[in-house]
Image (cartoon, rainbow, N blue to C red; front, side):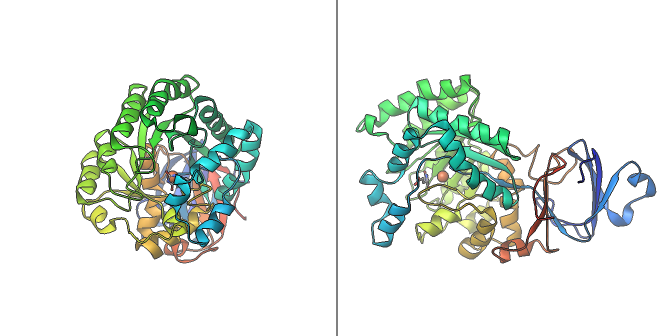
Length: 406
Ligand code: DI6
Ligand code: FE
């Protein structure tokens, strides 16, 4: 169905990744890319010649959704920790007592590559069913060279075997492994001198990420990781200002980070640093919700300084066991007071920018990949307004139908 190399999708209510079109649009796809688009009222007979014409009858068309921050490859799960938190333990207390991230490290190290692949697959399929066409997947539960590479190999394999673009990020500096107890600097040296070069040698990582926090790594340690990543030609990102304000976001921006993520505790100086460096602010309302945080990210400041805001699931076994990007659209509006259009930009154009992929995906614009979704509504606000609906009727990746209800 709709697999010819020349397609003309007509009568779309278009949200192009940044704005909604004022009138019904026609979108031409040639060999998997967007060739051109124009209002249906301006279509000539010549425009249509040679194309397979698909009338979507007013349905909402958006770019394929981009989940620019996930940790969806991991062993085991943390339902027990969820119960402990219900009884009053905090995330930090659990982490300091050797639970939290480190308990997932134990389960991930014990799992084979095949086991990790099989457990990650339904998580990724859930995102795909929600309209995701590009997903970022981080390592970070191996915390030694062999197990970090194992996670990244699983992420690459997911991208080969499932109809979704996968971008990989090495998050070796996620937590301190037990072998390096009391030697965080020594562990950072391992990340810089062995893990990053090994990931680069196997082409397993597109970017490098860090967790800059009191319970993880200092700003100085993160800066060492950034320097090593950049020396190997990799992009950088940071988990920063999630639980406290250490100045990690400004440091990441100064180092040229594509994005800084979480940022509930970001202050005005930090926001200015992002604006100056063109670094994206990635909002992760799932972790905010699960941890019942009350400190809001500085949305008004981000607007004032025109920092692009991306939005992602942070899908992970601890702070965001949530495999729905559409739910994040609602949470970003309900919890963080984004407008529906801001939220939608966050999972399309700005999500792409957070991955450095803005010239490939995230917008419906000439020259970009023909990755898009059609929804059972005409109004983009409904994607954020309602949970569970509207239905995804078509999901198209590089011009090929791939999922959706229709
Ligand atoms: N911040 C988070 O919210 C996740 N990682 C991070 O640096 C949590 C990961 C986990 O708890 O397993
Ligand atoms: Fe995360």
